[in-house]
Every structure is written in structure tokens, then in C-alpha cells.
Image (cartoon, rainbow, N blue to C red; front, top):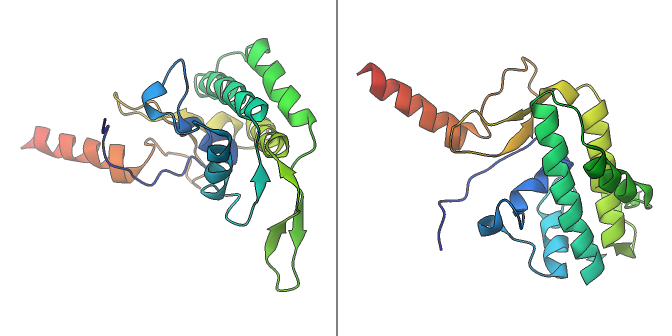
Length: 184
């Protein structure tokens, strides 16, 4: 079933890049993490970038689902200036406690990833990014897209801090068209 066209969406933080992969309870139609290898494929499309060879097992995929659900809850709470629920915090903190991915600097000045990366290390890296986001300078800039039919969350990292849409290409443009038509 087709739910629309793909579009570029930069949520502003690695941890928020996990959210659009779906969610069994809330967004099953968008689920893209069906098997362990899908988690590694997702990582290659994120700001982690290509070159990460990660081995993921079924238990780590289940942990990714739990972390994603926790991130949805925590990011929505941050976006709504609400208190953070202890249960998702426990999931986040448990994931962050594992050793993260290990980056290496190559002689040509580029980054590579150490061999032997696991799904747990990948999830730890995502969880640590979430802790940095939720406690850092952009913590008050976690926002929900203002479109009435969009559930995407993002960190507004713009200088002015006035980002309203998940993507100007999608929701922002739709709003501009709607406003223009209403004027005419």
C-alpha cells in the first residue's frame, strides 16, 4: 500500500532519525525494521553514514523497537514541555549504558568505524545522542511538525529557532499553497 511519496527529512539529531522507521503500536504502516539487517541498513542512511558494518540479532532488533518507542515518548514530552516518563527514561538509559560504536580516524582525514560493531553498540550511540539532545542546547527546540496531518518530530537547529515544519519540501510547501489559495 502506498502512503505518499518519499521526501527529504532532516530531524536535526541521530536519535530522531529512528522515529520515522515506524512503530508497532502507533505507526505500523511505516515500519521499515522488519528483520535485523534492516537496522544496519537504516544506520547507513543516517548521519552515521556508510561504512558501518554492524551485526544485529533478533534480540537487538527487539531492543531497537523498545528504544524507538521510548524515544517517541520522550521526544513528544520534550516537544510539549511535559515531564519525562520514568519508564521510557529507563529504556533510554539502559541502552546508553552499553558501549557505543567506536569511530576511527583514517590517514586521509575521514572517519571509519571499528570492526565488530553490534546492534547494541548502535543503539547505545543512538541513546547517547538522545541524552545529549534532551539535555543540551536544543532540548527546548524539540518540536512537532505544525501540519495537522503530520506526526514527525525534529530538533530545530536553525539559527533563528523558528522552524515549524518537518520539511519545507512537504508540509511547509503544503501550508504555503493552502495559505495562497485562501487569499485568492
